[in-house]
Length: 320
Image 1 (cartoon, rainbow, N blue to C red):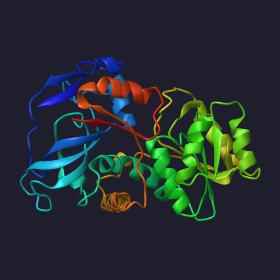
Image 2: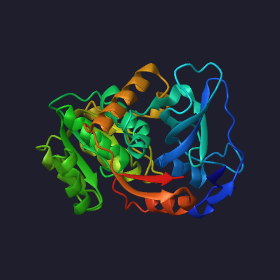
Image 3: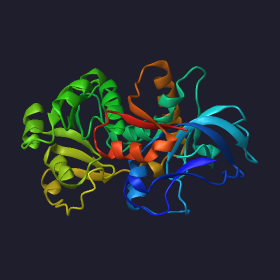
Image 4: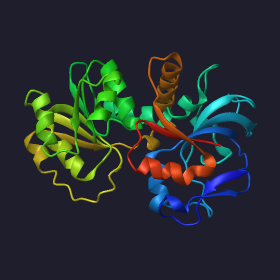
């Protein structure tokens, strides 16, 4: 099969389009013919300097397609069924193997590209807001990097739950586009004084919850944006900025900081059912997936570079 691979970690240019052996089906697993690959932030981080489980390495956490082979012991999946799948690595390829437990059926007539973008983005957003963030109707939430895949998902879910939704993005144009997804107040976090703008938009008290996927100095600002008893969620480090964080101020406001990694929960019954609900809502038009741009799998290097340029509004997808 063809795959986007690299022999050493580094910049997007390390990706090559090469022939590699087809993945083997294993007990409890499935092999799918990949039709759409959602490039996740973790994919670019792993390519840049993460662990290589294989050489050459096929990176990628998430894709959708049609089942080609079913492993021993799998009774709820069948050849020819369309699914979206999560995996440790291997999505950037024409074929991918994964445990059946981290796959979800795609509804008849549903868009396979949209489905490919749902589990990690919407699952992460849901866990940050509700499972760990404990967001309630009437509370306020600040979503950092609102124009990203997790950000757009979190804005929709928070608005649907009855929260006041604030979000940051790097330009006024991107913030304007977010209004269609439920944004109540946008803040340009490339400008000085954005923490003051958050506090002003929240009546001076700060927000009840922050979902921060950027990290570094932005996370420090997220904590400064909290109301009394506010909760900050840190989920990833998209800014790739190593920074020591002084958390001593949390105690004076009885505030909390929680790290979230949806990958640790994705195979649980709770999370699996939650993702299935989001897939149904996307298929029915109750939630929206925004795909900024698609690239052929052969142009994975350009796709990674585009995602890292922070120009994308929503998801970037590879098409084998």
